[in-house]
Every structure is written in structure tokens, then in C-alpha cells.
Amino acid sequence: MQMNADIFYGYIVKGDLLRAMDHLQNCDDSTALYTRYHALFAQEQYIQYDVPPMLDRILNAYQQYYRDVFYLLMDKDAACSRLQARLIALLGLPTPAPTLDELEQNHLPGIFESEGFFFLGGRTSGCYGPYVWKTTETVSYSVELPDGVQPYTVKLLDGFITRSWLDYLSFGAVTPGGWADADGTINCIKASYDLSSEAFTVSLLKHEAQHTRDLAAHPDLPSATLEYRAKLVELIYSTQRNLLAQFSHEADPSDPANGHGMAAHRLCQQYATLLGHTDYASVPIPQIQSIARTLFKESNLA
View: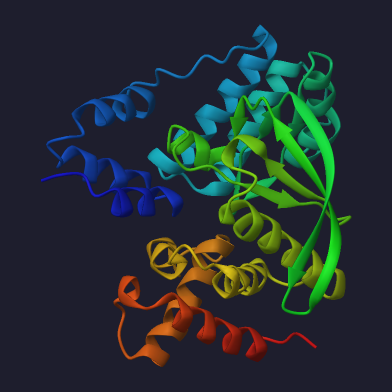
């Protein structure tokens, strides 16, 4: 059997590492890649990053957390507690011990900044995993959305050491493209994009700008709803790519904390009902766009 990249990376995006590794193990052309996964997760031959020793030890603690969550399938709260304990021990902090969120907000950024790096913690699709990079460039873009055109500040981030758990689980093959800050600033992982491409102008700018617009009006909007509306915006404006087929591989209703998976599942259910089938790859892009416009109007938050 040959490796099916859509199936394999579909598992990775869902955080289903064991099924992804099982797929590789059964593929004749993926022995080297499977060996790499086995060494990292089964044998704990962790990546050594090109950073000062203390930063590498901190990132090693996150690698152990990834193993706990995705390979050992440890309860996520227990895995967070283990990560918290490792970080506290590394930093030599006295009691009362700070929480994991406090460590990421108040302690780790300064340690990384003292060595010339930016650090951003927090959860991505329900799991912790830091973003660490070297440079930031600020630019401005006007972004068209279904509800109008608006200028957005965009930070182009470059020189990444690590880009959270999805980048780690895929060995850099699948990476987050960016995110929006609470103030509406859009952060772009520059290396992930050709800045003239539809992937950048639609899947990053329009997707994140829609998040910003929705959160400005509804600060407590659930992640799955945010992602559902932003993915519909991608479908409305994408003319070069059948993103519906791509989203179908991300669909996963099993983890409410994974807003992307929940949103893709809801979206695909809606399309299946309206199309009468699930052969998403065969749907013409103009039809995908037309349905997306209808679904977006129906999802009006007002």
C-alpha cells in the first residue's frame, strides 16, 4: 500500500497521532518517515533545537507534553500538570507555584526575549504548544469580507524555532498559518506563505479578519462557531482551490476543544445535505461558493 497524504495529514490535523503512525506502518513507501516517528515518540529521541541550553530544556519539556497527549493519550489535565511541574523545576520557582498559564504569560516570555526570541504560549485547538520566533515586521492590508472592507494591521513573523503542536507532529509539513490578537492585529507566519497567493489573501487574511470582526461584536463566541464562519469566508472567496475537500479531511466531531475539527464537521454536514452526496472533490468551485454565501448569511450573529 502507498501512503495517502490526505488521509495521513488528516489524522495529524485532528491530533490522532497513533492512527497516523499506523497508516505509515502499513505503507510500503513510508518506512523512513515511520522510523522517524517511532524514534521521536516511542524511543523519546527528542529534537535538539538550535537555541541556548535553557531554552532547549524548556522546549524539551513541551516535547514531553506532546508525547503525553498525542502518543500516550494521557488525560489532558494530567499532561498539563506534568508540563507545569517540569517547567517549575527547570525555572527553580518557589511555592506557591504559578499555574501553567501564569508560567507562559509571566515567566517564559522574558526568558526567551533575553536570548533574542519572541515567545507565545496558550492553547491551539485545545492543546498547549509554544510559538518561538526571531523577527517581526508590521504592515497594513485592506481586507474585503462579506460585510465590507476594513484595514487590518498584520505582523509578519519569521525565523521560527517551533510553531506549536501541529508543526511538531507533522515535522513541519502542516503548520498554523497565523492567528488574530485580541486587539484585531493579524499575525502571519511568513514562511508558510507566498504573500501574493490565495492561501495568504484568503486562508490567512480573510479567515483571521473574520475572527476579528466576529469577536469584536461577540467576545464570548465559541471557537467552533468562529471557525465555521471563517471557513465559510474561505469558501466564498477561494477560486483556485477546492477547500471543501480539504476541510472534509479535518472534520472531527469527537473533541469539542478542537474548534477547527468541529467547524469542518458542521460545514461538511451542511454541504452533504444540500448536495445530496459527500463527493466533495467533484463539486465545482462556483457551486461551493454559492452554497457558502447562503450558509454564511444563515449564520448571521446579529
